[in-house]
Amino acid sequence: MRVFVEGIGVLGPGMQGWEAASHVLAGVAPFEAAPVRVPPVTLLPQAERRRAGMTVRLAITAGIEALIQSGREPAEMAMVFAASGGDGDTIHETLATLATSQRAVSPTRFHNSVHNAPAGYWAVATGSHAPSTSLSAFDDSVAAGLLEAAVQATVEERPVTLVAYDVPYPEPLRSTRPMSSTFGMALVLTPLRSRRALGTLTLALADKAAFPTTMRDPGLEEVRLGNPAARSLPLLAAIARGESGVVHVGSIEIAVTVPC
Image 1 (cartoon, rainbow, N blue to C red):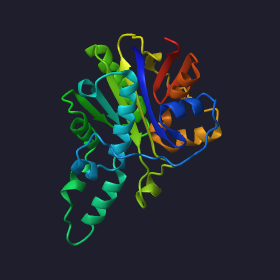
Image 2 (tube, one colour):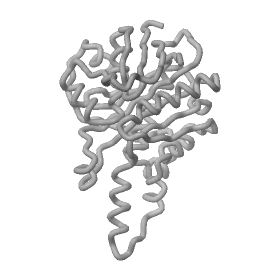
Image 3 (cartoon, rainbow, N blue to C red):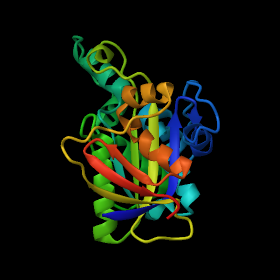
């Protein structure tokens, strides 16, 4: 399948937005693992803004940045949300409550606990009635999301935005499922080339013997390994450097052509 990238959003250590991230990934600026700052989502009504957790804010912030860059209307965009787990803080608090004698889970915690909560908040924030898909495939969640978004863009012949995100869990969940950092990214994928296209992606299932593409910088490689959503970094780096070639993200082989 062949799709075109029209917009990119990134939030990660030392990568506060695509402009900053592209300089780091291209080697123009040094990588410094600064803490991730995820802002409140001003598009949400005040009540929902208070209820939105880190996972929701991360997903919406990355998605909106990508769509602003593409010039596309968020309310009309089909969405694919991919995360290896979910809102770890909410899961932790829910389990802690269920372990008490009261066992009264708050309604806000309950509705934030479902895997498609970011998709629901996205619809509220953007007024979207377009279709959305929420999926999880453990460490291959980015690869699964890329495959799903590319299939939808190709079959439905419409733009699709992929948003991939993961946030570290609190203890004791962190000991079982460790993540070293917060990371979110978004790609606006289209079936047809436009003047805004940043690159071409040709996707295929990778050979079982293929190894994932790694990052040249040790610090960025640590980020890639420390967060499932950051498995997308080699793909983002290829676009940032303007390098055509093949990268492997999980079970997906991606031939990147830059410029288109």
